[in-house]
Image 1 (tube, rainbow, N blue to C red):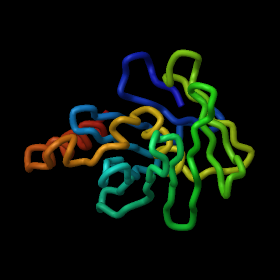
Image 2 (image 1 turned 60 degrees about the vertical axis):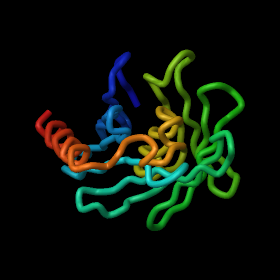
Image 3 (image 1 turned 120 degrees about the vertical axis):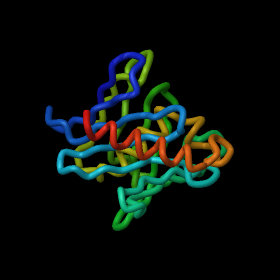
Image 4 (image 1 turned 90 degrees about the vertical axis):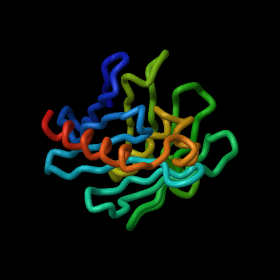
Length: 170
């Protein structure tokens, strides 16, 4: 995953092929994910310490739920999969596990998460990576309740639609 400094846009690559474009929308406390096939997801808080990814039909794709008080353990679940996101004692290091066995390692650079490498000998669902990114890049938002962050009004909903339309034009 790569993002320029001070940017809200990220790209997820697999073997030098872009497989997703991620965009943070800080004022609305959501993120969006766009895939080469035209699929789009919105990543948004869904209650205290829960974040979900939903498609354009508002169908939940996956969710991540905080399991520990300090936010160092999360459960990532979706149709047909269940993983754990676990913080490593080394700063900017995380693991994706199944049943306590590590499957992938996520590493940020020495000073930021602008460049993130994901080492995985096995295939990991994209939803797991996208939700892990959201938690790692935005932990304080992932831990909060959505209504505590921003009131959902017609104005906020229309802003989400406008931001999604704008991102599809780019």
